Amino acid sequence: MPVASHSVVLNLTQQAAWAKLCDLSLAPYYVPGLTGCQFHPGATEGVGTSRRVLRKGVQYLDESVVQWRDGTGFVLRLHKGGNDSPFPFREASFSYALQAEGNATRITLQMRYSLRGGRLAEWLLAKAFDKVVRQIAENLKAYYETGRTQNADMAVSTSNINVA
Image 1: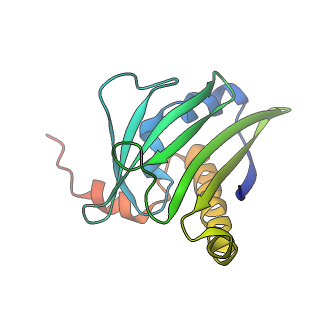
Image 2: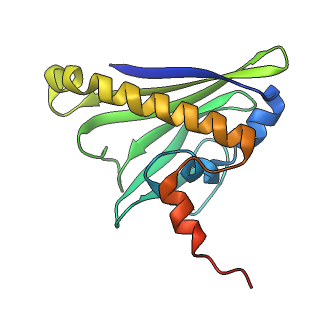
């Protein structure tokens, strides 16, 4: 199964990085194209947690936690509704892993996937998936270190909220 992977060093301790990473509602602040996140009924942390991430228009993707390593990372299964993976995937998962490096922390993001179009489609789309994973990692780093969203779509969707 092909893997797209990227790693960056966060200027945060592992404990501080985990405090942000385990909050699964934060993804729209660093994943390009997302406009929001809603949890499915049940847990909001740990194995079995499931969320729907919203995209521009009325598009969405469901993500469910299938592995959880408290303090170090987790794996999300990507699906749409029931059990089906969204087109063009036959199956897909996304993992986040933290590793201490002195007072900093390395985070490694990996997307494992197989495509409905087979090996040729996987070969043709490999660079695009590598680019997406790299962008998510770079955006995550900037958001975690500054607190400012790196996702223009999220910035627009939250700029119109009136606070009473």
